[in-house]
Structures are given as C-alpha cells and as structure tokens.
Image 1 (cartoon, rainbow, N blue to C red):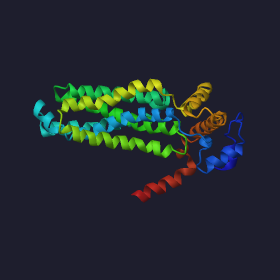
Image 2 (cartoon, helix red, strand yellow; image 1 turned 90 degrees about the vertical axis):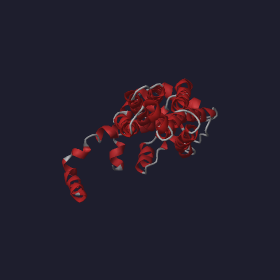
Image 3 (cartoon, one colour; image 1 turned 135 degrees about the vertical axis):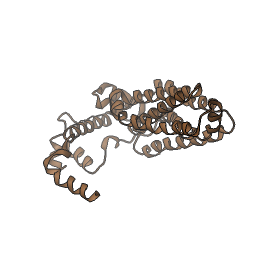
Length: 287
C-alpha cells in the first residue's frame, strides 16, 4: 500500500506527523517502541508467569512416552487404545487453533492465558485420576486446547509488553521453558508413576493461574479495545519510572488505529476481481 493511501487511514488525533508513522509502517518497522525503555522487574516477572504454561506445554508433549508402560498396565489399555490417547492431543490443538486468536483478542492476553490454564489444569487432573480410556482421552484433548491457546496468547503477550531491545530474547525464552518441561518429564517419568507425573505437570499451571493476578494487561490490547487511560497506567508499571511514556502511548494508539483500519479494508480483498488472475495462476502452478 502506497504512502498516499496510508495517510488517509491515519487518525487525525495523533500527535505524530503522519509521514513519520507511514514511513515506519511502510518499512515494516513498528515505531511504538522507539523510546529508550529498559526492562523492569515487572517485565521479567510477567514473562516468567507467562512461561509457566509453556512448561506445561512441554510436559504435555513429552508425557506419553514415559507414561506408556504404566498406563497400559494399570488401565489395561491395548496398543491401539493408547495410540488414540497419544494422538488426540493434536486433535485438541487443531480445534483450539481455530478460535485461539479470536478468544485472545476478545478477552485479552491475560484472559487467554487464564483460559489456557483452565484447560491445562482440567486436563492434567483428569489424566491423573483417570480410571478408563475415555477420561484419559478427554484430559488429553483438554491439554491440546490449552496448548493451542497459550501458543498464541503467550508469545503475543510477551512481545507486547517488552522493550524492543530485548523482545527477541524474552519471546524465545518460551521455547527454552518448553524444552525444559519436555526434558524434565522424561527424567521424572523414570522415577515416579504416571499419575504423580501428571500432578507434577499441573503445578506450573497453578503458579501461572494465580500469578496472572499480579501482572498487567498488554498495553497494545488495551489500545485495541479503546481503554486509553489504562494503557498509560500499564506503561508506567512496565517501564522505568524515569522514562516519559506519553510518546510511546501515543504511538501505540496511532499504530493500533492504522492496523485496525487496514485489517477491515483487507478482510475480503483476496476476493476482489483484480486479484482473480493472480489467484488462478497460483492454483494452476500448484497443480
């Protein structure tokens, strides 16, 4: 989209010159974090709380292997029945991925993580106290839903609260926590029963569930839903008290308004007549 088209989308109330934002968006650069804001304890604590569910994510993906012999022996499952238990995790994740973005945008990043915790806690407790194959499968599907939601809400929340100079490091920490959960499940699976292993995996979910009460909502989501006063208050918590956050708050508002308007304009752009040739050529090439 050209510069002249973007200028028509910019809010007139922005305190920035339109060309400043347009130039940045056109170059793929979000100017909302150009202020010199160092990370604060609130940012690190919020990141830690977010990563707790990624530990449960890792436990869920690694759980089926060390628990296999114990579950099949205790519940008398066949190989086919246990294979269903392993695979329904992907079914839950697939179904959850269809709605994770809409839910997180509707109830907020913290609300999305709370919902993921509900599915994780329900899933792990159902597995830990299962007496039949159907309850095992139900718990496994619930874990899949939790994985789908936290895969969207977690990294998005961390990216939206972090200063740009350490954003990459903080968002990649999710993957580190995932592999830690995966590895720890394999180690502990050789030492404890499959029921105890499920109860261990649910512990970080409770940590996050209660820890969310003490972390701020994403400032970008607050701008997205039009809660401007809370946006500035949240930035005060996330940034250094010595920094002036009014500029960053204004940038976030302006960028969000542009993004929303562009999204509305592009909702059905693929189905316009002028794109018909490009789409059909692409389909023919794939064939």
